[in-house]
Image (cartoon, rainbow, N blue to C red; front, side, top):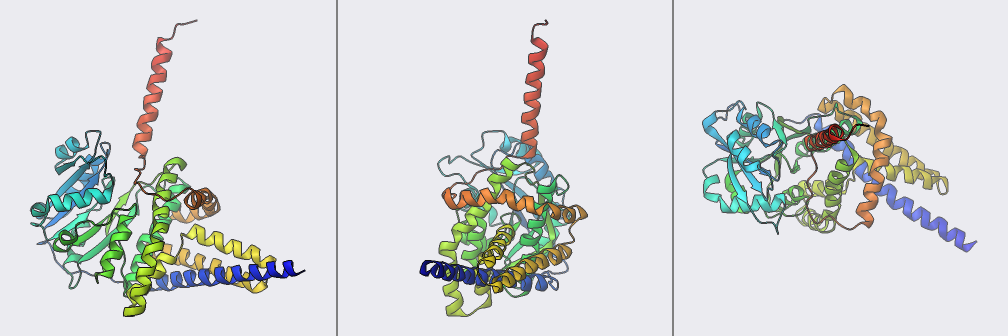
Length: 422
């Protein structure tokens, strides 16, 4: 009898803390989503005098580097006001040669014992500081990215706005039509990279960096270098800058897109890196930010804590489902809390995708959300029990998979053609 009563108390305690955490996270998402509806970007009318250096870190990107460089060189911006610099980082292919042929300036880095995007950027910013100091702004763009024609115009306009030193551009997905996985990844990018960035900036917080399309006043970036070397160096660096008093602005009209993995093995690698690295930040970033929030009492620090505390939406739904199940053996009030969390999450998704103007294919893919959540369960299990992500692992591109398949097909056909006839 006593053991049964103790078990019920334990379940109630678990439900209480789970309900409080989920309610806080969902309420924050709802407020940020509503705020996103009235967001206005920082900008000036004309800013074509801003000299911009576009830096592309690249590791074995021979299949895509030419197209990415060409997209930047083809933007609607005075050709004498910007340059493209490719960091060929520990490449085993001809990325450097192809980048030069496409019109980029190339910095080749050979430090095999210190791989990683953050390490490559830090090396570039310190080694080539004098070259980059000739530019007013620096934009970091991934080597598998396509930028919109007005990308640099929008970056220049934001960096020219009073009080704006840091800008995150709209980082999106280029292949939402490929299958349900890429469509739901588009939805995740739209909500995380666009809607939350709009809402956080509108409320006076920092939009934060998303890893791709990060723009800086060159003097500020060259002063710091790139001190963040974890697998989520973008978030780590934006927190460092925030603690030093620098807020990241957001421009949804400076658009760039990247291909997302359509197949499970490649998507698994990418998700483990993103979400595992974000969870690793909790241990040291949240206490530091919470201390700054309590001592300085500024919303931007409270906002950063709340943003980090919000789990991925799939995990949020799983936790609300767990709370609903626990309510069956505990108190009905926990079912009400679970229902609030599920309804709040749906509100965030529906209103957020409307704010983002998501294509019809993305809305249709929401029907596959349960499969998406089931796919994420082993990923979270691996993060929880498989140890932390300490090394950056490159995601295999679709073009590489297709080339590999073509190679296998060619070898098979050659073997068939040379085989003795019966």
